[in-house]
Length: 161
Image 1 (cartoon, rainbow, N blue to C red):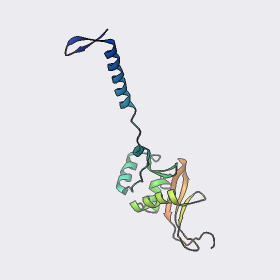
Image 2 (cartoon, rainbow, N blue to C red):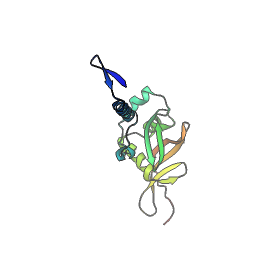
Image 3 (cartoon, rainbow, N blue to C red):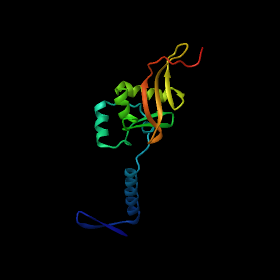
């Protein structure tokens, strides 16, 4: 027969109750260690735009390889790192401007854009289609990294109608 101390007194437990107490304790401990999966936790929420100041503060505290954004195209993950003046968030902010709108365009181009050499582009829905936004993928930090993103100002067109 097992015993335990309760309120400073030794209390004897019968073997069946001791087994139930041990099992309940083990179940409770494992529930705390392994979070339960739910359909909501499995879904990837649509990323919201980040303000310049929040990313800027983050990049001041971390190095160039720190990931500030993640974008998804199906199961593929693309990241944007703080970067330098020649690639990543710092390059986009300095050379092309960063805003919540830019973040949204990057997310849309990666998720829904047309794959092109070294990245993704958004084209107009006219004939002939005109390229409006481009993302170049691949940095010194990795192959699925945002090198740069910008509005296309010259009128490049895709195939003829």
